[in-house]
Image 1 (cartoon, one colour):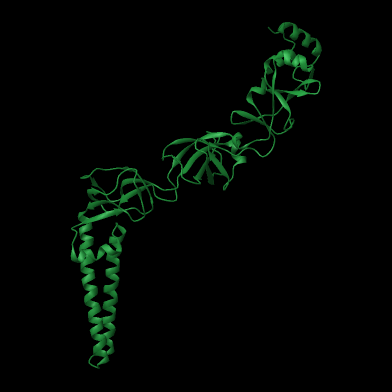
Image 2 (image 1 turned 180 degrees about the vertical axis):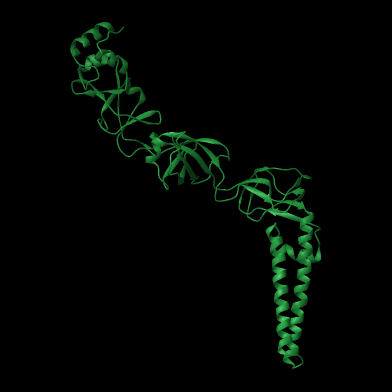
Length: 357
């Protein structure tokens, strides 16, 4: 029966040129007997954007690692992987010989500052009583200013390696013998500890990985999609339904990979970890209609779609652009028109004058 129908259809298209914008005059009953299935094409929807892989990274606006600014031996960890921490949280305790020198320098500078301040108050009173000259007070004031600067410089050196301002005073009453705490510069989550208790670390060596509360993704965007993406635009973390905001888009194409570098930030928290590879979905194109992949018949360099017409089927050769697993057609097809999504190869055989089973 199917062979008879095909032969009957062939008689309707004898003489039609291959790949022309041609029509097959087929009534509804014949279309039904051929077993063709049609589906309407629609404008691009949210889920029709092309997908590409991206790697989750910590925010480039905050440090992903914590460093020991003074070398020493790790005495104790105060945190564990997976633990959220606030800015200023003590992460570990180090014992450092070089820090001991800084501590002693501050204690000496603090003592000299207190002595020079007392001397200044005394000479101010002596000048008021007419006992000393103005020149003597000026000299004492300069010495007090110098001592004050030396104390602030010594305190700054300790603050830079992790001391909190209120911890400095404890050095006067409870000397800590070269011990200090490495603190988190920003809020985040501890992802991994890079050393064990007892390890010796050098100046500036990383000791801990810390991911920020707001994660980003890094990706290589295919060049063909670059025109549809701009800084500030929203993308979608397709696996989690979380939006991403494009924060950086390179203005040059990598000649080797034909891709463009992209950085985007999660709009809200998502169940992902730094280093994880996820699927990111670009926004759908603003014009045209989406044609299912099964509706497209490839013939050499041409792409043909079979469209339902008033008198049967019309073959249209169209310019297609991949969007995800389907195609975008910007011209030659209107939203709502129906295309063959099952049996397109059979229709192609008819138009080429081939028989069937």
